[in-house]
Image 1: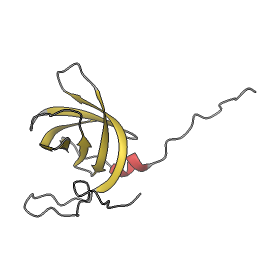
Image 2: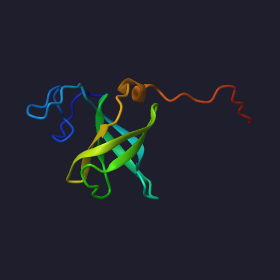
Image 3: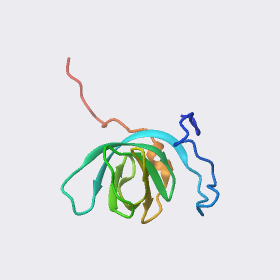
Length: 118
């Protein structure tokens, strides 16, 4: 996977001038589950980039800034955070607690000792 893509919204530098953010973010494309806290709705979404402090997600609907949310990231599990920004079907989620983003890049392993009958 490329660290940067041609998509201007997902191609990010290590430092965003004027935002106070200074974390390495990897561009990637992962499927994830997304939910707002206190609502009985779960959406399938795409994660476009991921860092220790947050992620950018493609959302099927607008979610207001500062809304408490959770995202189920492959290899990590449910991570809580808040919507930091929202524009053009994408949103930034700032995590409540930092994560190790490299866990999302580890291959998903197949179940062991699986017998296949022919």
